[in-house]
Image (cartoon, rainbow, N blue to C red; front, side):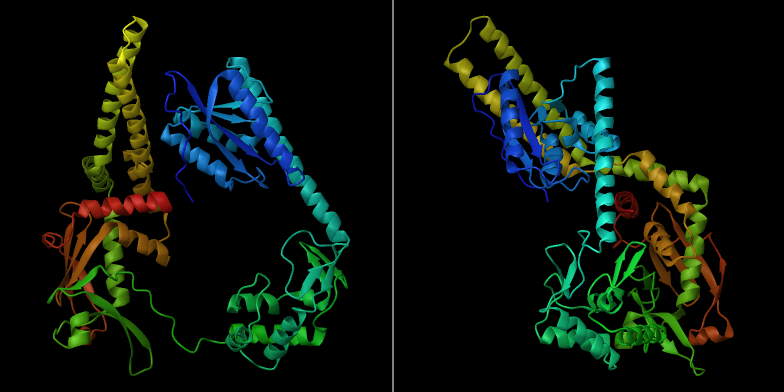
Length: 538
């Protein structure tokens, strides 16, 4: 979670003084607390010897560098965008990550924001040779991390051979003894036995969960039982005394809580219940929901299921006004036919190179026109440039011997203005977030051609990106696409059973163009929103 760091920037900071922050962390759990304090102490000495002013110290306690989940470290990387410091002081290169890619990427983030990284224990000259040396040090950091991981895995394998805990979550009903071997927990083992006995007696998982929670019993982590947590207990062979670690199985490697007969009976019952058919139909997934409207009254059409005389289940789209108020005579349309038709027409758009380039260009132009943050940032940068010019002029005046109260007051004003503008620019940059390019839009759209449109999720994405709305009449369908003049009307020739809403066939009549209704926002804006969402979160 991002927090608002208060930097201790001196009010009387001399022009040209370098502001720095310190990052310190444990390199492993075996280090004492003093190692953190030692890093901070050395960093302060380093800053003093180089004329740096430390404005903040970031510390991750009891963390490893193997992953990038270090909260203070991640906060520091984010804060580089605020332009409140120019140098990050570290003990060694391995504090910046544990592999070359991670270190390089993290340093790139800092360099992009005008922040350089310096190490206390490893002197690296700012020369071509220094670049090579730094690469070597990064390689050693990566090697150490991999070696440490191998040592941990080796230690876990040795513990497994002795049937000891390897440090992961232990099963409910056990605890770890002084020799790191599993022993029965007299407080929670009865809960495990109750679960198995109830399931073997024919109680459902839901019934057992309800009963356990009513008794105030808890899972290993202290939470309430759920269907998932109960299944993890019922499927765990360790309760029969089998120690399991990866592909190792040691009979009698841990104390037994459940006898073999009960465990096997429960496994057979789980298999039978898993194969049992659901008592109710699976809810249909109507991918045109919120996009399909009645052509007669303009109200949304909603999904509806029904059963024919033969007992077969059918899914339809029906006018919501007709269903709720019986005030519209629009016939229902079969879900599969309508969705297939819309998907086919959307795919025609996707496969048209000329049309796709037209969409890309118009979306990019629209994005640039809507990008107000760019103009605001340009204005802030222009103001910052003027403030810095003013400061430079005053510095020259002071060097020439022109110094008085007015000069000092103006210098303070410009310094404060510069500080405020830097903070405002940093805030706008952070708020602006990810900035897309024309290439982003093009890559996203062309990559849609590679999806498997037999899959429901791919169909949903296609509809979400390209289709603005669908209007269904008794004799035609109008599809409004998310681009200028992207409207297609398709005539429908009803079959004999079409009168009952059982289905329809269609033929394209693309010469008819129907304008989008006024209540729709800019179709290009919707299209752009889809692009940005999928670029960021896919």
